[in-house]
Image (cartoon, rainbow, N blue to C red):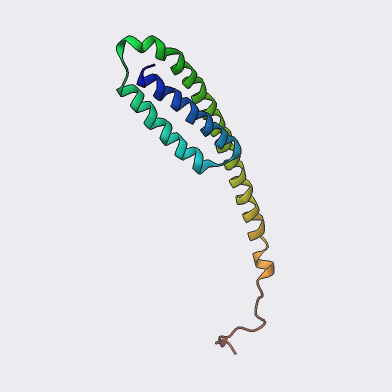
Length: 116
């Protein structure tokens, strides 16, 4: 087996771990694995051999499918985060409406009134 096929296999394995990390919500680990997968793909591309291209085709198609799964999971997480931020913003607006009723207003001003 050629080195490029080996790197593609390693990239597939790393991609599956990346997907598992995304599903578990471990974004930092998924990011690290994504960079590792990118490096492996670059290595595979640089070491490709023209007579082994047909052998790489099936693995690249599997990698393309995996990339689609990763993208859809990342979009789902992005949407969840966006909704959570909207809820937090609305809650903040709601709570800030109570600020005037909670803040104690002094009975008398500490400044002298010019009219008296």
